[in-house]
Length: 408
Image (cartoon, rainbow, N blue to C red; front, top):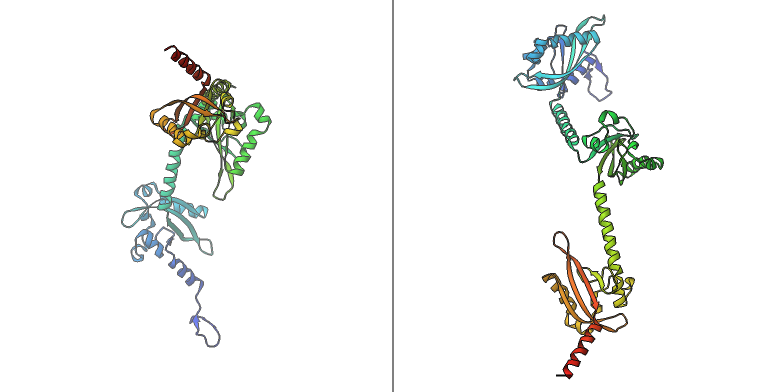
């Protein structure tokens, strides 16, 4: 008779469940793992729902059969099933991943653990075998490895950028072909070396390499331009981006560093800057012409010495003001300023002579040329305006015409 448990007055009495029964109920409810037993020779002696789900065999079909039928032909020929049991018996455990075969002949990638079962006297009486189908995890891992391999090949194939990794201390952990091309170091020369060796002596003394890593770690990115030093001691002007790398728990594990040699671009920018500066000085030095720019709406964008000389306005007074203030009331009312810009934009040039008004209200006779300014895509970005005071020339012409008329 099974022992009874006292549930108290008014409650039904139920038989106690033994530890063995609990274990069987537990194993029998598991479907995510194949959990079953083998005898000492490797024949199946128990079978849970998870085993049926993964392997495809009913309990009646498989009990008493040798577990080697779950292995591939190659593994059986190599003696893997016997090796697995021998290892478990000798070392107390056998763990392995590999292909296993279902009843229908399809394969799954399985994670397998085999533990020996010993009698109280220490005699081997069988094995406990736990198998899990991890085909999906393996496929995901393989896809990740393939993706990482493609990415590694991509990075390695890049030669226009130095792309490499640093550990948390700034030691070089990887090195691509672009890095070798720009820096001059072979991979075996630079791996494990501190990245500060690429900086100038001045930058190292000032602690710039360490500050760059601190900024990247704190702000999520460090971007900079500056001189860097190649293996042979020559310098290049580099554009550098440093990004921190974190693990899944948010811990800093290193840095990704991308460097590009922009020495030629810097030289081109410097040449352009000097050219623009010379042009600016040239325009600013001209006093016989008012030379200035307007934005697309006709507001003054810059102002040269000649413009101040003719118009009477200082740069601070006129920048941002509309150029129509230089026209007479009559011309503004007739819409001449707007027509001038429209004509320049439409025909590529506007040329005109007429009265213009200085800051003090006096008038002068001006020769005006307005040219449209467009960007590389042809979009109108403003106008160049050149004005010359030809009042004296006009008066001389009028006087000459008047003198000639007297002799006619």
